[in-house]
Amino acid sequence: MTRQNLRDRIYDNLIQRIRSGAFGLDDRFVDVMVAAELGSSRMPARDALMRLATEGYLVPTTRGFVLPRLGPEEILEVFELRRLLEPRAAALAAQGITDAALAVMERAVTDGAAALAARDGPALFTASEIFRNAWLSVVSNRTLAQAIRRYFVQVQNVRLITMQQEEVLPVILAGQRSLLAAYRERDAVAAGDRMLCFVIEGEIAFRRTLTPA
Amino acid sequence: MTRQNLRDRIYDNLIQRIRSGAFGLDDRFVDVMVAAELGSSRMPARDALMRLATEGYLVPTTRGFVLPRLGPEEILEVFELRRLLEPRAAALAAQGITDAALAVMERAVTDGAAALAARDGPALFTASEIFRNAWLSVVSNRTLAQAIRRYFVQVQNVRLITMQQEEVLPVILAGQRSLLAAYRERDAVAAGDRMLCFVIEGEIAFRRTLTPA
DNA sequence: CATGGAAAATCTGTATACGGTTTTTCCGGT
DNA sequence: ACCGGAAAAACCGTATACAGATTTTCCATG
Image (cartoon, chains in turn orange, purple, green, yellow):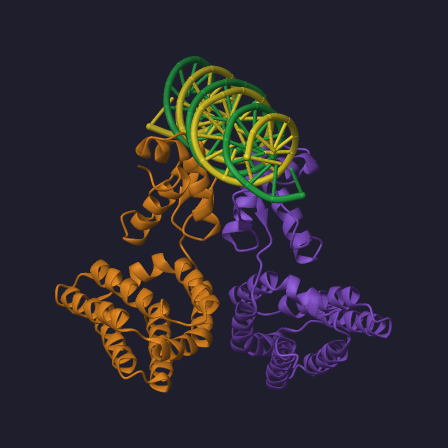
């Protein structure tokens, strides 16, 4: 009972493992290997890998695909996009928030706090993924939500690394708590303002890592 | 001397023609057809079509790929994105403007004026494509420019139709002239403001077509 | 003329094959 | 031990084939 086709199953499998940080920067992805692992021929694996590549999860090399190592300038470009889009999206989310989404976010923040206590970067990463998906899912402008999802994908690996720097972890959790409070009150203005703060804080933290002096 | 591989050549070919509005809403894209047109086998054509689909330029159906059919609500969603992104992008463009880009835009406005005089909607459409590509090409934040290009493609068909309504044509040209003046002066603030006006005018015009009463 | 349904055509997904190119291995000469 | 270069391996792009699913065609029946 295979629900979808092999290509999509391989894609889902790989993207989930990439997102969870299961691969390192020196892991190589070759269609034959991936195919063997999932028991298919080259083609579905190849399709999945090429899609991941065009979406920015992987970069093609002359010998297989590897995780991208993004330059600082591209990451800063994404921060600019985030400043422009996410405050508005958060405001829309506050207007359309549901009890179900709130519950998911409450849970994600709780899990994130536990991860913070355990100094578990990847776990906090997962929790903040869940948090973000929850509020994005109630943004009434689906096109806007999709635009946000698209660029988030591209900086995923960087975020994973960033989240291993212990000093930023409390900031992330505090930002989520602040946002969650605004969502709970269905306060669109506060949600937008706090999201802008959150993004800017992230940008400042990132810029600090660029100039460690 | 084929510089790149077939897959990318087919992709480039198709995306260029899609962008230029060469296809209609009832055109169907089937890998075999596309392959025959470009003289290859199915696989490169298939790869190109699947990529276009994951990027949102095409929509997969049970029988080939088609251009995405947008409802009014989705178009309004894109207007919201435009309001958020394009003012900033225009401001950045004003900062990075080059003589070459200015020349292209001057020419596009001239051509647009001729198209307006001739009541030639499609020609004005082409001219405004050129105009937009010119300023987008000097936006320093490439990620931002790409995000804008992405949703523009999705509303291409609608724009083609809108541009056949004669009353909106002068508005478009006036907006471009206003923007061009700001670019010429390298005035980032004015460029941002005028772009916001331009987008809002377009949105209002579109809303008017929804309620003809 | 409408309708049901079988047959044909069409399209997708997947497998396999093969040539060309790049990388790695490895062996012989210095 | 250190190259240089040839042989081998690895990998990518592309072509072709075929099975399964879906749509369309078309004919027979009411």
